[in-house]
Length: 115
Length: 114
Image (tube, rainbow over all chains, first blue to last red; front, side, top):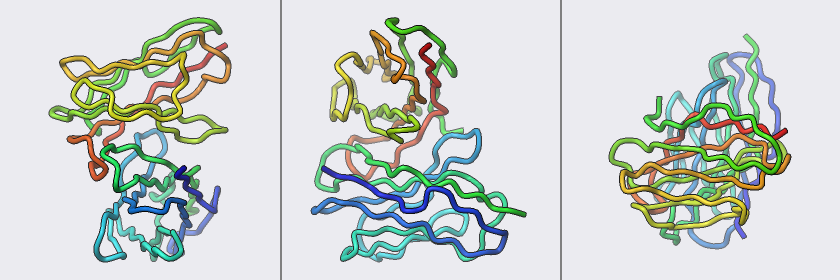
């Protein structure tokens, strides 16, 4: 069965610090990978996605993620965080060979950015 | 605003009761997904409907059922409620049924079972 693991449950950073959130998945086949963000009091929004091609993908608000197939990882990065990045971040996986959009989510990482 | 609406926002009920959660997808989206978010289980996929038909099923309890109507709105029915069913229930929609469709999430319904 597919599973997704996010290593950091709670991260506290100061503004301008660099961010890297870990995400590993377990699934042997082709995968589609996503990072979603949930700002306080808001709905989940897509940050970025990877289907194929260049393993370094860029998303909204300066976020990027790198797919490393050999490590089954899809880590999220941002060079310089802002207070407005305070939110919960979810990594999600979909089995690329399936004909459904079923997403398997990680447990989420709460990011707190101090001004 | 994602364009996905869910009602009600909050629901408080007692054990053993039955409730219905409603979701209206974004205009034109044919797929509807239901997810449950709880402290101990995280965000879990429950079920997907595409154009009125069930497309995929996750760890959905037998006490739970869903359907998608001809106007594409969906309802999630939860019966014989238990304390452990207290959670945030999200609906999402996408334009197609496949694995690459971006899902747009609604604001969720917070269910509290007392």
